[in-house]
Length: 222
Ligand SMILES: [Zn+2]
Image 1 (cartoon, rainbow, N blue to C red):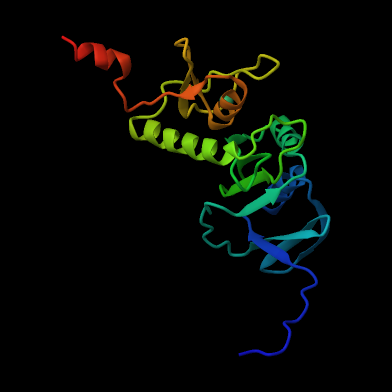
Image 2 (cartoon, protein in one colour):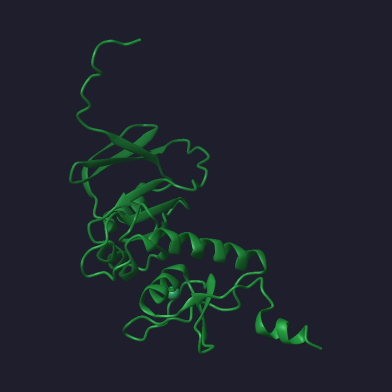
């Protein structure tokens, strides 16, 4: 067993191999990174990007090697997730909002980088400006994931998200769950909007796709 203290780590650089270094640099600049240094050799090119103390080295190799599309390349936590997402969306990057996971009470979203890798963005804590959710957030999130899985298993949602944003713009995300209220209104929603509706609308609930409901009950009467 080691009895001496481990050496102090001063910095860490994450390395990502990319197909096109300029495309990748532009993409990471949208996430707030800036070029720190760059270099080129006969068989490789690289650029170091920095964002505060965080460093990413993007590299290409010649001849290029097979780059698998990774299910998760980076997870970045932001102070203000919505500001980060607006910046991406205004540059035409498709953003999928994933609701409020326990590790991202301020919200979580998924984007795909130019090489097809998944990158997750999150905000650790809810801010005062965001609706209160407290302890319910964790259970609401797992309820929505469970419902989305059930919907996907039975063939998926029949429409895109039917919730519009505060400016009336349609949501471009795929619907993943159906919500209902006691008055009988229903809406198909993406996870992010479903989360918002459950949080905001008193009496809204996740519609159970596996149940025959009242129709089934009445049918059984005959
Ligand atoms: Zn939506």
